[in-house]
Length: 329
Figure 1 (cartoon, helix red, strand yellow):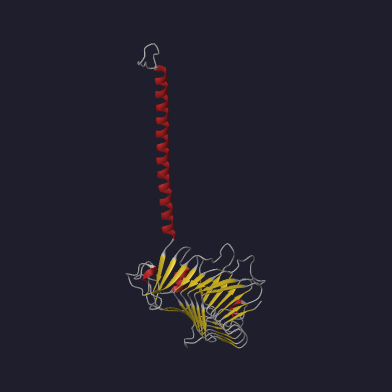
Figure 2 (cartoon, helix red, strand yellow; figure 1 turned 180 degrees about the horizontal axis):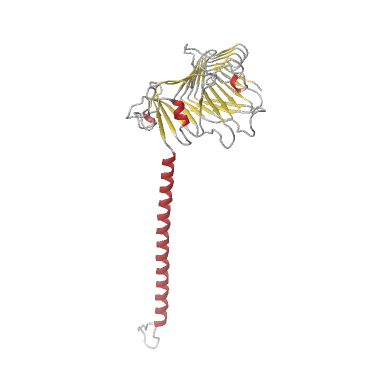
């Protein structure tokens, strides 16, 4: 400002040049920042796309339909006809969709369907081309039966499969964890009368050192010839011949029904034993019988924990204590 002439402003060229330099510098920084953000955005999109492609490439839906031959599981038309083949060809994060029918593990007593780490198995499909989502299945209508009745007399007795299904972790690193699911099946006619430790337990389902989620399943007319659950047995503590450490079993049964399962010892329906933790949520127990204790459920000793939430018990019986539930501590 010119102080000798009131009302007249005189430009300070040096200050103007400094301001122009600062403005240009800030503009340059802004352009560089914008370019950097664009580069980061492009890289982020590339990473997300790569992850999505990787996941979609690694996870598959494998279809199984009784009576189909020569398929590879990629569609209902090209479904596997054998459930064991589908399980064998599955990998972590895969889903196995199984159409209505009766599936047996094999022809030997020691054969069973082995749940696979982080593979989800869903029954209840009709097996038609317009079934493209899990919401299309109807387990109550399209009964998908896993049966141990290999002697074909429509009952659980000696000669049938010792376990219809087996969920057993080989190590902590290969744990069958809660991302492993069994959903929408009828499990029947298992007969646990084997000679080894675990083969005396869990005619329908044996869970050992594993924590799958079992839901919307029906366990019916399975038998245990010893102590440990006609329908299902949950086991944690390893025997001396098994590797250690092994994970603690912590499965969940949700919206399942246990009907007319039996045991020559304890736990007509299901047993939790040897440091296991198990949940039963919204389940129904009816017509189960144990010759000793726990007509439906038996929570064994050695720090096992059993949680029962909103379940229904009726017409269960036991020769000893606890027609419905026996908690032994």
